Image (tube, rainbow, N blue to C red; front, side, top):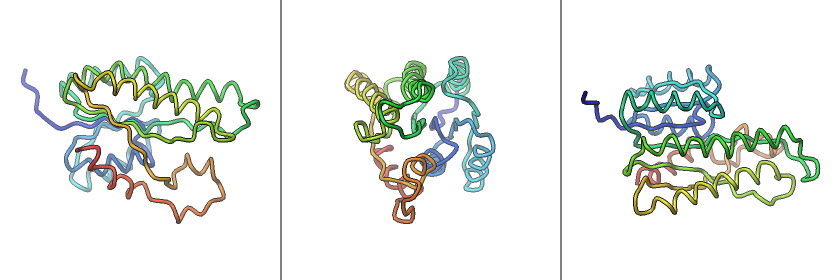
Length: 217
């Protein structure tokens, strides 16, 4: 059976913030496969994409559930046979706390989402990207900052994993990029800096527009 050669973009963490903005920015050229846990937010994203003439497939799933990610990737293969892009802005922001007071449950959840789920997705998505696809991760270099122990350590571990994958695939593909967005007024940042002036921050839409050339280049 011949599959249509549609440009495809899987976005894990697409329901809000940078993920949603990137989904809308890529929709004119890609079929968006939007993964997130909030059904209502995904439906709003789908409405925006359709209103702009694009198409999306909604996947209201938890990236920490192994069976769900297996099913997702199998469905992508069955429908398209490949992925052109995988963008991974999904992240868990544990509450800020001194290193000696990090809650075990908060740390376990951060490890599960930020590191273990990323490792699992790399394993499942690699065959879909083949040698010409591209994976993009988003750095946030706050590892080692005071009170950022759980978030900073697990985010740094996620990026270290991505850098290893990047080094391993330089000659064979897929291409792996690591980009650094500017600070944005997202829900994640609001948990870290509840009193800051959000008007001074770059919007997710502006950051998506700035990052798209690097993502597609």
